[in-house]
Length: 427
Image 1 (spheres, rainbow, N blue to C red):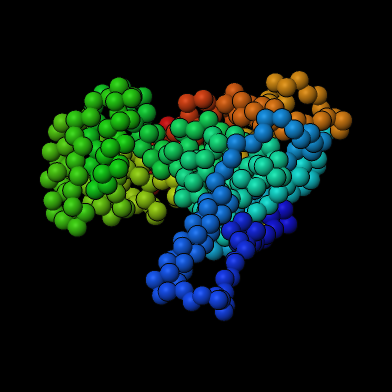
Image 2 (tube, rainbow, N blue to C red):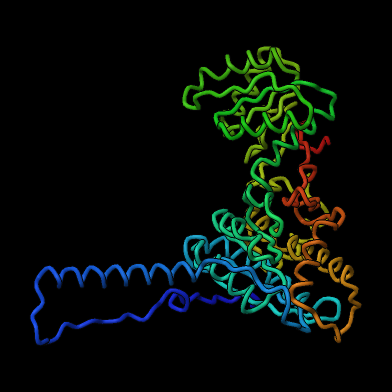
C-alpha cells in the first residue's frame, strides 16, 4: 500500500518534561500565604511552559532556501486515515493505491519517495505534519486534505511553508494563497456554469431564487463579473412552500433567465409552477439526484457532490477510463466513491505536468544522475502548475493561473435537458 496508516504520536510534538516539586522539611516554617503564593507561581509556570511547547509544535516556520540535494522526487501525503474523516480518507488513499505502479516507475528517470502521514482527522495535526514534512523530510510537494477544515488550516499557513500544496478538498481561501492549489471543485462552480450559459445564449438578465444567502451572494458577484444584470435576488422560507410559486412568478416577470437553487422537491415545485404560469424564459436548476421528467425543458447542471449521476450521457473519456480501472479493483464502488477517488488521479496528473514544466524551467534533463535542490524545485513546481495549459482530467478541464488556484473550470459541467424522456447534453 502506498498510503499506510501512520499514526501521529502527539507526544513527539507536545509532550514536555513534568517537573515535580516537593516541599520537605526545612529549617524555618513557611507561612500559609507564602506556600499558596509559591504554588500559584509554579502552576502558572507549568501552564505557560506547556502552552509555549504546544504552540511551537504546530506553528509553521519558513523553510530554508538553500541546503538539501536529493536524487529522488519527494511527495508528502497527508490524509485522514483514522478519526471522523477516515471514510473519505480511505477512498482518497485507494485512489493513490490505483496509481502505485506509475509512481513506482518514477518520473523523468527519477525514483519517487512518498511520505504518507495520517492526521487523525485533526486539523492541528495536519499543520504539524506539514511542518515536519517541509522542514525535516524536505519534500518537494504536499498532497492533502480529507476535509475543508484541514484545507483551510493549510491555506492560512501555505505561504509560510513555501512548498506547493495540492488539496483534494476545496476551501475559498486557497485562491488567495501563492503556494496552495485546489483540485476539488469549488462549492458554487456549477452556478458559475449556469451564468456562463446564460451569457452564451445572448440573455442579459437573470433572477436567483434560493433559501441560501451564500448562493444569493455568489450569484450577485458572479453576475456582475459576467456582465449580466441581476434583476432579483430573492430568498424565501423553505418551509413555506406555498409562498415560493408567487415569489418565483414575480421574479420571472423581471428576468430573461431564472436560476432555482434548492433541494430536489423545491426545484421540481418551482419549475412546474413557472411553466404552469406561462413563463417561457430559460430556467436553470441543479441536477436532481434522481431523474425527474417533470423538468422537461429545464436546463440542468450537475451538483458537484452528485458528480456524474448519468455516466453514459456526460462522462468524459478520461473519467470512463478511470472508472473502468477503479471498479476493476472496487466493483462495489458507488458514484460518490468513484468521484472522490478520481480527484487523486487528477492530482497526480496535474502534479506531473507542473513538475515537468518546473524541471524544464530549471534546465534539468531526464536521467538518473539528476541532483535536485529542494528549494529551487519547490519553486519550479509551483511556477510549473500556474503555467500548465488546460488539461483534461477525470473530472473535466483543469487550469491553474496566478489568480485562480481552483483548477477545475466551470466548463467541465455540461448543460443537460430532458429530451424525449432522456437526459442529454445540450451544451
